[in-house]
Image (tube, rainbow, N blue to C red; front, side):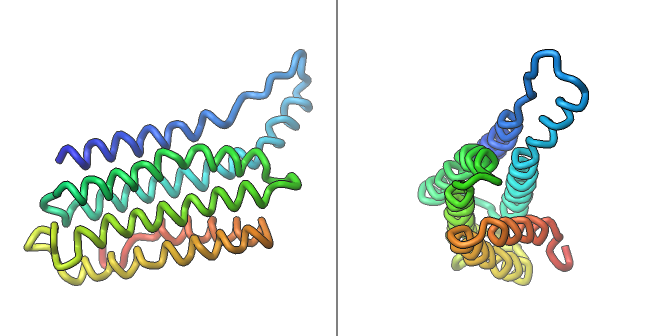
Length: 194
């Protein structure tokens, strides 16, 4: 399916762009100790890369899962999926912003933008699935109703959970990060019975 292939390409590019924000420290005549210190100072970049890479990887895996059940597409579905891809392609920017300001006075701004991006992305992902599965609009007639229901329930957790991380970012960067990391871990766990 061309739509799935295009989606895979956009996700692959977005996930690859994440690493470009981790830059090699350039210290003229650096001692090993200085270089180790500079590498340690990049911890926010490593953390941002890890959270975003895993989250995008899980989105890609879940996108593959839903396309096992989707048998056809239409123009509206293509546009909704394109909106999801717009959100995914944008993720490297808030990842870099969050990483650059983590541990600094403006860290809450980075986390607000970062978690807010994931709220919108989670809503977009849900719109893709809801549009396709509502009334079995685009699903394969042989799709297992239990599996479809399980996917629908699991995806509905994303938007409010990311919204919680977004709201927490206004008050506590640490609490927001904990929720984001917990969500990343939660979505790595396979679906029951899959």
